[in-house]
Length: 227
Length: 205
Image 1 (cartoon, rainbow over the protein chains, first blue to last red):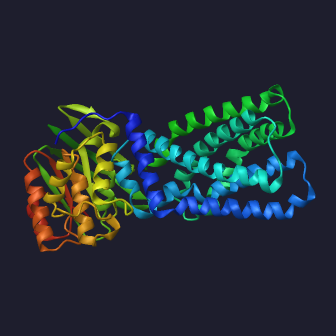
Image 2 (image 1 turned 45 degrees about the horizontal axis):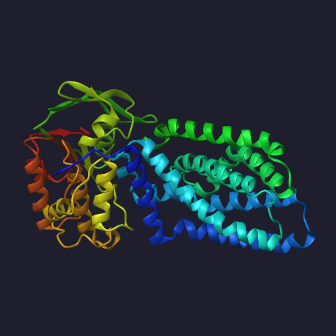
Image 3 (image 1 turned 90 degrees about the vertical axis):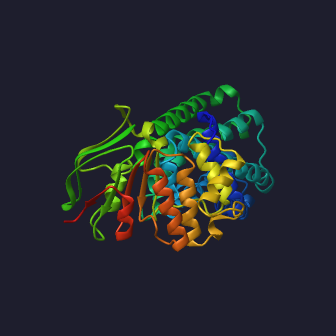
Protein backbone atom coordinates (compact mmCIF):
# COMPACT_ATOMS: atom_id res chain seq x y z
CA UNK A 1 0.00 0.00 0.00
CA UNK A 2 1.42 3.43 -0.88
CA UNK A 3 1.91 5.36 2.32
CA UNK A 4 3.36 8.63 3.42
CA UNK A 5 4.25 9.97 6.79
CA UNK A 6 1.52 12.07 8.39
CA UNK A 7 2.37 14.78 10.89
CA UNK A 8 1.27 14.84 14.52
CA UNK A 9 -0.96 17.84 13.75
CA UNK A 10 -2.75 16.02 10.89
CA UNK A 11 -3.40 13.00 13.11
CA UNK A 12 -4.73 15.27 15.87
CA UNK A 13 -7.00 17.08 13.41
CA UNK A 14 -8.21 13.69 12.13
CA UNK A 15 -9.42 12.86 15.67
CA UNK A 16 -11.17 16.25 15.93
CA UNK A 17 -12.71 15.89 12.48
CA UNK A 18 -13.97 12.40 13.27
CA UNK A 19 -15.64 13.74 16.44
CA UNK A 20 -17.18 16.68 14.55
CA UNK A 21 -18.59 14.40 11.83
CA UNK A 22 -19.97 12.00 14.46
CA UNK A 23 -21.44 14.90 16.43
CA UNK A 24 -23.11 16.39 13.32
CA UNK A 25 -24.74 13.03 12.64
CA UNK A 26 -25.80 12.16 16.20
CA UNK A 27 -26.04 15.65 17.83
CA UNK A 28 -25.65 13.97 21.19
CA UNK A 29 -23.39 16.45 23.03
CA UNK A 30 -24.44 19.66 21.29
CA UNK A 31 -28.13 19.02 21.97
CA UNK A 32 -27.43 18.36 25.65
CA UNK A 33 -25.29 21.43 26.28
CA UNK A 34 -27.35 23.87 24.18
CA UNK A 35 -30.66 22.76 25.70
CA UNK A 36 -29.18 22.92 29.20
CA UNK A 37 -27.76 26.41 28.57
CA UNK A 38 -30.99 27.76 27.07
CA UNK A 39 -33.18 26.37 29.86
CA UNK A 40 -30.83 27.69 32.55
CA UNK A 41 -30.61 31.08 30.86
CA UNK A 42 -34.40 31.32 30.63
CA UNK A 43 -34.87 30.30 34.27
CA UNK A 44 -32.24 32.82 35.41
CA UNK A 45 -33.70 35.63 33.31
CA UNK A 46 -37.17 35.01 34.77
CA UNK A 47 -36.01 34.55 38.36
CA UNK A 48 -33.37 37.26 38.81
CA UNK A 49 -33.71 39.36 35.66
CA UNK A 50 -36.48 41.47 37.15
CA UNK A 51 -34.48 42.14 40.35
CA UNK A 52 -31.77 44.18 38.58
CA UNK A 53 -28.88 42.11 39.95
CA UNK A 54 -25.43 43.67 40.21
CA UNK A 55 -22.82 43.22 37.46
CA UNK A 56 -20.80 40.99 39.81
CA UNK A 57 -23.74 38.60 40.18
CA UNK A 58 -24.44 38.67 36.43
CA UNK A 59 -20.86 37.75 35.55
CA UNK A 60 -21.02 34.85 38.04
CA UNK A 61 -24.33 33.70 36.55
CA UNK A 62 -22.85 33.82 33.04
CA UNK A 63 -20.08 31.41 34.02
CA UNK A 64 -22.45 29.22 36.05
CA UNK A 65 -24.44 28.70 32.84
CA UNK A 66 -21.33 27.83 30.81
CA UNK A 67 -19.92 25.57 33.56
CA UNK A 68 -23.04 23.46 34.07
CA UNK A 69 -23.86 23.35 30.35
CA UNK A 70 -20.37 22.00 29.66
CA UNK A 71 -20.80 19.45 32.48
CA UNK A 72 -23.88 18.07 30.71
CA UNK A 73 -22.12 17.29 27.44
CA UNK A 74 -18.33 17.33 27.44
CA UNK A 75 -17.86 13.99 29.19
CA UNK A 76 -19.46 12.29 26.17
CA UNK A 77 -16.23 12.60 24.18
CA UNK A 78 -14.76 9.67 26.09
CA UNK A 79 -17.80 7.97 27.60
CA UNK A 80 -19.14 7.20 24.11
CA UNK A 81 -15.77 5.80 23.02
CA UNK A 82 -15.68 3.46 26.03
CA UNK A 83 -19.34 2.44 25.82
CA UNK A 84 -19.27 1.64 22.11
CA UNK A 85 -15.92 -0.16 22.25
CA UNK A 86 -14.14 2.28 19.92
CA UNK A 87 -11.69 3.43 22.61
CA UNK A 88 -9.53 0.35 22.02
CA UNK A 89 -9.07 1.05 18.33
CA UNK A 90 -7.92 4.58 19.23
CA UNK A 91 -5.51 3.20 21.86
CA UNK A 92 -4.04 0.83 19.29
CA UNK A 93 -3.82 3.47 16.57
CA UNK A 94 -2.12 6.54 17.99
CA UNK A 95 -0.30 7.96 20.97
CA UNK A 96 -2.22 9.52 23.86
CA UNK A 97 -1.20 13.11 23.06
CA UNK A 98 -2.99 12.89 19.70
CA UNK A 99 -6.19 11.69 21.36
CA UNK A 100 -5.92 14.31 24.13
CA UNK A 101 -5.40 17.32 21.86
CA UNK A 102 -7.87 16.04 19.25
CA UNK A 103 -10.59 15.66 21.88
CA UNK A 104 -9.64 18.92 23.59
CA UNK A 105 -9.96 20.82 20.30
CA UNK A 106 -13.35 19.21 19.72
CA UNK A 107 -14.51 20.20 23.23
CA UNK A 108 -13.21 23.74 22.67
CA UNK A 109 -15.16 24.06 19.39
CA UNK A 110 -18.26 22.69 21.11
CA UNK A 111 -17.94 25.28 23.89
CA UNK A 112 -17.24 28.03 21.37
CA UNK A 113 -20.46 27.17 19.51
CA UNK A 114 -22.29 27.23 22.84
CA UNK A 115 -20.81 30.63 23.75
CA UNK A 116 -21.73 32.12 20.36
CA UNK A 117 -25.34 31.13 21.12
CA UNK A 118 -25.37 32.05 24.81
CA UNK A 119 -23.58 35.45 24.81
CA UNK A 120 -26.12 37.38 22.67
CA UNK A 121 -29.05 35.78 24.50
CA UNK A 122 -27.47 36.59 27.89
CA UNK A 123 -27.01 40.24 26.81
CA UNK A 124 -30.61 40.49 25.59
CA UNK A 125 -32.31 38.64 28.46
CA UNK A 126 -30.28 40.09 31.33
CA UNK A 127 -29.68 43.53 29.82
CA UNK A 128 -25.97 43.66 30.46
CA UNK A 129 -23.46 44.76 27.83
CA UNK A 130 -19.69 44.47 28.29
CA UNK A 131 -18.07 47.91 28.21
CA UNK A 132 -14.72 46.37 27.30
CA UNK A 133 -15.41 43.80 24.56
CA UNK A 134 -11.73 42.87 24.12
CA UNK A 135 -11.43 41.91 27.76
CA UNK A 136 -14.76 40.06 27.70
CA UNK A 137 -13.95 38.05 24.55
CA UNK A 138 -10.42 37.39 25.85
CA UNK A 139 -11.84 36.08 29.14
CA UNK A 140 -14.35 33.87 27.33
CA UNK A 141 -11.75 32.41 24.95
CA UNK A 142 -9.13 31.83 27.67
CA UNK A 143 -11.83 30.42 29.94
CA UNK A 144 -13.00 28.01 27.24
CA UNK A 145 -9.42 26.84 26.59
CA UNK A 146 -8.94 26.05 30.30
CA UNK A 147 -12.39 24.51 30.57
CA UNK A 148 -11.85 22.23 27.58
CA UNK A 149 -8.34 21.23 28.73
CA UNK A 150 -9.46 20.29 32.25
CA UNK A 151 -12.68 18.58 31.21
CA UNK A 152 -10.92 16.49 28.56
CA UNK A 153 -8.66 14.70 31.03
CA UNK A 154 -11.42 14.46 33.66
CA UNK A 155 -13.74 12.92 31.04
CA UNK A 156 -11.04 10.35 30.26
CA UNK A 157 -10.80 9.50 33.97
CA UNK A 158 -14.54 9.19 34.59
CA UNK A 159 -15.22 7.25 31.36
CA UNK A 160 -13.98 4.13 33.17
CA UNK A 161 -16.20 4.64 36.23
CA UNK A 162 -19.74 3.38 36.70
CA UNK A 163 -21.36 6.66 37.89
CA UNK A 164 -19.93 8.85 35.15
CA UNK A 165 -22.33 11.80 35.07
CA UNK A 166 -22.21 12.71 38.75
CA UNK A 167 -18.50 11.96 39.07
CA UNK A 168 -17.65 14.24 36.15
CA UNK A 169 -19.21 17.30 37.80
CA UNK A 170 -17.88 16.43 41.27
CA UNK A 171 -14.32 15.96 39.98
CA UNK A 172 -14.46 18.96 37.68
CA UNK A 173 -15.62 21.53 40.22
CA UNK A 174 -12.49 21.65 42.47
CA UNK A 175 -10.19 21.44 39.44
CA UNK A 176 -12.02 24.28 37.67
CA UNK A 177 -12.49 26.50 40.75
CA UNK A 178 -9.35 28.68 40.18
CA UNK A 179 -10.39 29.11 36.54
CA UNK A 180 -13.93 30.10 37.48
CA UNK A 181 -12.71 32.61 40.09
CA UNK A 182 -10.40 34.23 37.53
CA UNK A 183 -12.88 34.41 34.63
CA UNK A 184 -15.69 35.73 36.85
CA UNK A 185 -13.39 38.52 38.08
CA UNK A 186 -12.31 39.44 34.54
CA UNK A 187 -15.90 39.32 33.26
CA UNK A 188 -16.95 41.60 36.14
CA UNK A 189 -14.26 44.11 35.15
CA UNK A 190 -15.43 43.96 31.52
CA UNK A 191 -19.06 44.56 32.63
CA UNK A 192 -18.32 47.38 35.10
CA UNK A 193 -16.06 49.48 32.89
CA UNK A 194 -12.82 48.82 34.76
CA UNK A 195 -9.43 49.19 33.14
CA UNK A 196 -7.17 46.44 31.81
CA UNK A 197 -4.96 46.97 34.88
CA UNK A 198 -7.90 46.08 37.15
CA UNK A 199 -8.04 42.66 35.50
CA UNK A 200 -4.29 41.99 35.33
CA UNK A 201 -4.12 39.76 38.44
CA UNK A 202 -6.97 37.40 37.40
CA UNK A 203 -5.65 37.47 33.80
CA UNK A 204 -2.25 36.26 35.00
CA UNK A 205 -3.97 33.54 37.03
CA UNK A 206 -6.04 32.53 34.00
CA UNK A 207 -3.05 32.32 31.64
CA UNK A 208 -1.03 30.38 34.23
CA UNK A 209 -3.97 28.05 34.83
CA UNK A 210 -4.42 27.31 31.12
CA UNK A 211 -0.71 26.67 30.55
CA UNK A 212 -0.29 24.46 33.63
CA UNK A 213 -3.54 22.56 33.13
CA UNK A 214 -2.92 21.76 29.45
CA UNK A 215 0.76 20.88 29.98
CA UNK A 216 0.06 18.62 32.97
CA UNK A 217 -2.98 17.01 31.35
CA UNK A 218 -1.13 16.17 28.16
CA UNK A 219 1.76 14.72 30.20
CA UNK A 220 -0.49 12.61 32.43
CA UNK A 221 -2.99 11.62 29.78
CA UNK A 222 -1.19 8.43 28.67
CA UNK A 223 -1.38 7.00 32.21
CA UNK A 224 -5.13 7.64 32.36
CA UNK A 225 -5.92 6.59 28.81
CA UNK A 226 -3.86 3.57 27.98
CA UNK A 227 -4.63 1.14 30.80
CA UNK B 1 12.18 -9.67 11.62
CA UNK B 2 10.04 -9.10 14.71
CA UNK B 3 10.24 -10.98 17.97
CA UNK B 4 7.72 -11.15 20.79
CA UNK B 5 8.85 -12.54 24.11
CA UNK B 6 6.84 -13.15 27.27
CA UNK B 7 8.97 -13.70 30.37
CA UNK B 8 7.28 -15.17 33.46
CA UNK B 9 4.08 -13.23 32.82
CA UNK B 10 1.52 -13.58 35.62
CA UNK B 11 -1.84 -11.95 36.23
CA UNK B 12 -3.86 -11.75 39.44
CA UNK B 13 -7.13 -9.89 39.96
CA UNK B 14 -6.87 -9.23 43.70
CA UNK B 15 -6.18 -12.63 45.26
CA UNK B 16 -7.55 -14.55 42.27
CA UNK B 17 -4.90 -16.02 40.04
CA UNK B 18 -5.67 -15.88 36.32
CA UNK B 19 -2.39 -17.37 35.10
CA UNK B 20 1.19 -17.57 36.27
CA UNK B 21 4.68 -17.67 34.78
CA UNK B 22 3.84 -17.75 31.09
CA UNK B 23 6.92 -17.89 28.88
CA UNK B 24 6.58 -17.54 25.13
CA UNK B 25 8.89 -16.63 22.29
CA UNK B 26 7.55 -15.89 18.80
CA UNK B 27 9.33 -14.62 15.72
CA UNK B 28 8.01 -13.38 12.36
CA UNK B 29 6.62 -16.33 10.44
CA UNK B 30 5.48 -18.12 13.60
CA UNK B 31 1.90 -18.44 14.78
CA UNK B 32 0.37 -19.50 18.07
CA UNK B 33 -3.13 -20.48 19.14
CA UNK B 34 -4.06 -19.75 22.75
CA UNK B 35 -6.70 -22.22 23.85
CA UNK B 36 -8.57 -22.68 27.09
CA UNK B 37 -12.03 -22.72 28.62
CA UNK B 38 -14.05 -19.56 29.27
CA UNK B 39 -12.47 -17.50 32.05
CA UNK B 40 -9.06 -19.07 31.64
CA UNK B 41 -7.54 -15.68 30.79
CA UNK B 42 -7.15 -15.78 27.00
CA UNK B 43 -8.41 -12.22 26.48
CA UNK B 44 -6.49 -11.00 29.53
CA UNK B 45 -3.28 -12.45 28.08
CA UNK B 46 -3.98 -10.77 24.72
CA UNK B 47 -4.57 -7.43 26.44
CA UNK B 48 -1.25 -7.78 28.25
CA UNK B 49 0.51 -8.63 24.99
CA UNK B 50 -0.90 -5.57 23.19
CA UNK B 51 0.12 -3.31 26.09
CA UNK B 52 -3.36 -2.38 27.29
CA UNK B 53 -3.12 -4.23 30.61
CA UNK B 54 -0.24 -4.39 33.06
CA UNK B 55 0.82 -7.88 34.15
CA UNK B 56 1.08 -8.54 37.89
CA UNK B 57 4.50 -10.06 37.26
CA UNK B 58 6.90 -10.62 34.39
CA UNK B 59 7.33 -8.65 31.19
CA UNK B 60 6.40 -8.53 27.51
CA UNK B 61 9.21 -7.62 25.15
CA UNK B 62 8.92 -6.62 21.50
CA UNK B 63 11.90 -6.23 19.26
CA UNK B 64 12.55 -5.48 15.61
CA UNK B 65 15.86 -6.58 14.16
CA UNK B 66 16.99 -7.28 17.77
CA UNK B 67 16.20 -3.66 18.79
CA UNK B 68 13.81 -3.45 21.75
CA UNK B 69 10.65 -1.42 21.06
CA UNK B 70 8.42 0.40 23.54
CA UNK B 71 4.62 0.51 23.20
CA UNK B 72 4.54 3.65 21.04
CA UNK B 73 7.16 2.14 18.71
CA UNK B 74 5.56 -1.28 18.17
CA UNK B 75 1.94 -0.05 18.03
CA UNK B 76 2.12 0.82 14.28
CA UNK B 77 3.09 -2.80 13.52
CA UNK B 78 0.28 -4.35 15.59
CA UNK B 79 -3.33 -5.08 14.71
CA UNK B 80 -6.07 -6.70 16.76
CA UNK B 81 -9.45 -8.11 15.85
CA UNK B 82 -11.71 -8.98 18.77
CA UNK B 83 -15.36 -8.96 19.76
CA UNK B 84 -14.82 -6.15 22.31
CA UNK B 85 -13.28 -3.84 19.72
CA UNK B 86 -15.63 -1.78 17.58
CA UNK B 87 -15.51 0.79 14.80
CA UNK B 88 -17.49 4.05 14.62
CA UNK B 89 -21.19 3.48 14.03
CA UNK B 90 -21.80 7.02 12.80
CA UNK B 91 -19.10 6.78 10.14
CA UNK B 92 -19.30 4.88 6.86
CA UNK B 93 -17.05 1.90 6.17
CA UNK B 94 -14.84 4.09 3.97
CA UNK B 95 -14.67 6.89 6.57
CA UNK B 96 -13.75 4.38 9.27
CA UNK B 97 -10.89 2.99 7.19
CA UNK B 98 -9.66 6.47 6.24
CA UNK B 99 -9.73 7.63 9.86
CA UNK B 100 -7.90 4.56 11.15
CA UNK B 101 -5.31 4.88 8.39
CA UNK B 102 -4.76 8.55 9.08
CA UNK B 103 -4.26 8.23 12.86
CA UNK B 104 -1.86 5.39 12.10
CA UNK B 105 0.13 7.72 9.86
CA UNK B 106 -1.01 6.17 6.58
CA UNK B 107 -2.62 7.74 3.54
CA UNK B 108 -4.33 5.05 1.47
CA UNK B 109 -5.80 5.91 -1.92
CA UNK B 110 -9.44 5.22 -2.80
CA UNK B 111 -8.15 2.26 -4.76
CA UNK B 112 -6.37 0.84 -1.69
CA UNK B 113 -9.56 1.16 0.33
CA UNK B 114 -11.63 -0.56 -2.35
CA UNK B 115 -9.05 -3.34 -2.53
CA UNK B 116 -9.16 -3.92 1.24
CA UNK B 117 -12.98 -3.89 1.21
CA UNK B 118 -12.92 -6.42 -1.61
CA UNK B 119 -10.53 -8.65 0.36
CA UNK B 120 -13.03 -8.93 3.21
CA UNK B 121 -16.09 -9.26 0.95
CA UNK B 122 -17.48 -5.75 1.40
CA UNK B 123 -16.98 -4.49 -2.14
CA UNK B 124 -19.52 -1.80 -3.02
CA UNK B 125 -20.46 -1.25 0.64
CA UNK B 126 -17.94 1.51 1.39
CA UNK B 127 -20.59 4.21 1.75
CA UNK B 128 -22.74 2.25 4.21
CA UNK B 129 -22.64 3.19 7.89
CA UNK B 130 -20.92 0.73 10.21
CA UNK B 131 -24.01 0.76 12.44
CA UNK B 132 -26.14 -0.41 9.48
CA UNK B 133 -24.00 -3.51 8.96
CA UNK B 134 -24.98 -6.93 10.31
CA UNK B 135 -22.70 -8.32 13.04
CA UNK B 136 -20.94 -10.52 10.47
CA UNK B 137 -20.32 -7.57 8.17
CA UNK B 138 -19.09 -5.50 11.11
CA UNK B 139 -16.63 -8.29 11.86
CA UNK B 140 -15.45 -8.18 8.24
CA UNK B 141 -14.88 -4.43 8.44
CA UNK B 142 -12.84 -4.94 11.62
CA UNK B 143 -10.60 -7.21 9.55
CA UNK B 144 -10.32 -4.51 6.90
CA UNK B 145 -9.35 -2.00 9.62
CA UNK B 146 -6.72 -4.40 10.95
CA UNK B 147 -5.26 -5.19 7.53
CA UNK B 148 -5.10 -1.63 6.24
CA UNK B 149 -2.09 -1.07 8.56
CA UNK B 150 -0.29 -3.94 6.79
CA UNK B 151 0.67 -5.25 10.25
CA UNK B 152 3.61 -7.42 11.19
CA UNK B 153 1.95 -8.69 14.37
CA UNK B 154 -1.67 -9.85 14.06
CA UNK B 155 -3.72 -10.78 17.09
CA UNK B 156 -7.14 -12.37 16.84
CA UNK B 157 -9.58 -13.00 19.65
CA UNK B 158 -12.26 -15.45 18.50
CA UNK B 159 -11.46 -14.70 14.84
CA UNK B 160 -14.50 -16.31 13.24
CA UNK B 161 -17.21 -15.27 15.71
CA UNK B 162 -20.32 -13.90 13.94
CA UNK B 163 -19.06 -15.01 10.54
CA UNK B 164 -20.84 -17.24 8.04
CA UNK B 165 -19.05 -20.03 6.15
CA UNK B 166 -17.94 -17.68 3.39
CA UNK B 167 -16.66 -15.16 5.97
CA UNK B 168 -14.78 -17.91 7.81
CA UNK B 169 -13.14 -19.02 4.58
CA UNK B 170 -12.01 -15.44 3.90
CA UNK B 171 -10.55 -15.16 7.42
CA UNK B 172 -8.69 -18.44 7.00
CA UNK B 173 -7.33 -17.18 3.66
CA UNK B 174 -6.27 -13.86 5.22
CA UNK B 175 -4.51 -15.51 8.16
CA UNK B 176 -2.78 -18.04 5.88
CA UNK B 177 -1.63 -15.21 3.62
CA UNK B 178 -0.03 -13.34 6.55
CA UNK B 179 1.43 -16.44 8.25
CA UNK B 180 4.75 -16.64 6.39
CA UNK B 181 5.87 -13.09 7.31
CA UNK B 182 3.99 -12.11 10.48
CA UNK B 183 3.64 -13.07 14.10
CA UNK B 184 0.10 -14.38 14.51
CA UNK B 185 -1.64 -15.06 17.82
CA UNK B 186 -5.15 -16.50 17.90
CA UNK B 187 -7.21 -16.91 21.07
CA UNK B 188 -9.88 -19.44 20.33
CA UNK B 189 -11.95 -22.38 21.48
CA UNK B 190 -12.75 -23.52 17.95
CA UNK B 191 -10.71 -26.64 17.19
CA UNK B 192 -10.76 -25.97 13.45
CA UNK B 193 -8.88 -22.69 14.08
CA UNK B 194 -5.98 -24.55 15.69
CA UNK B 195 -4.92 -25.43 12.14
CA UNK B 196 -4.11 -21.75 11.58
CA UNK B 197 -1.26 -21.91 14.12
CA UNK B 198 2.08 -23.68 14.32
CA UNK B 199 1.66 -24.39 18.02
CA UNK B 200 -0.99 -24.32 20.74
CA UNK B 201 -0.64 -22.88 24.24
CA UNK B 202 -3.31 -24.14 26.61
CA UNK B 203 -4.42 -21.93 29.47
CA UNK B 204 -6.30 -23.11 32.55
CA UNK B 205 -4.67 -26.54 32.76
